[in-house]
Length: 197
Image (cartoon, rainbow, N blue to C red; front, top):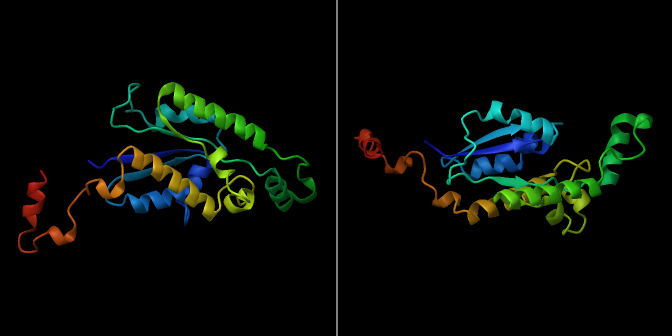
């Protein structure tokens, strides 16, 4: 059975399978190596998402398998000006005068996420900090002050790959689920499949 990579999160996860998205890029990288499963829920808070866990993953035991890699990813930073521009574009004069989210609050949440990852001994990626290390991150990585641009998706993809590679989950080193067509004898195709049993 092929391994699975499950992406569980909010709208950034939900949108990750759009053209050029980080989830779509992972699917391409791990083609024939692992199944990429998306479980993204736009607008959901962490509290709401936690209520879904036993519905989405009923077979997962409280004790995780040693082969399981869990990676907590912080939210990206918030471009407050970009959020206001998006609100005005969407709602005109009815738009709020203050952004509904702040970068400071996103930073608090990111710090909490990193602390929890350390506390329970799982990997983490601090998008909030790492993205802000790039000049002009607001427009480079975020299209509405919150959601990812193609560059933002590429950034997340590369950060996830670093963690996977560090955990010896490098796609080229993983076995394919079935042999490449060049390994199949067209006169005796059963042979290669019998060897895999």
